[in-house]
Length: 90
Image (tube, rainbow, N blue to C red):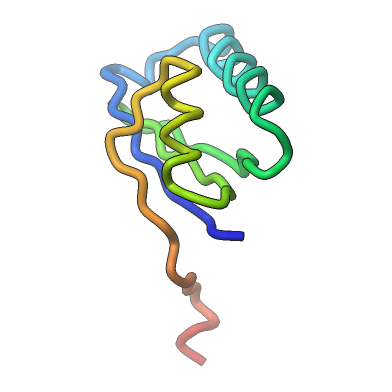
């Protein structure tokens, strides 16, 4: 199944409280449950003004639908083509 990286522009994302992040996470999970098992949230990285999310889904359109239903921005949805890490150099 394809993996995607989603860029969500959220001003002051890095200042969100644990309670606010919990609320966002809950909403995302509710939407995911309603969409079925083919879309999965892997993890997210919160930076100062953006949240980068990693999802597994059959299509970028399904990612955008999740964002629409949840009221989340999805400013960029990019399919991961391959991964590299320090062992790639060996």
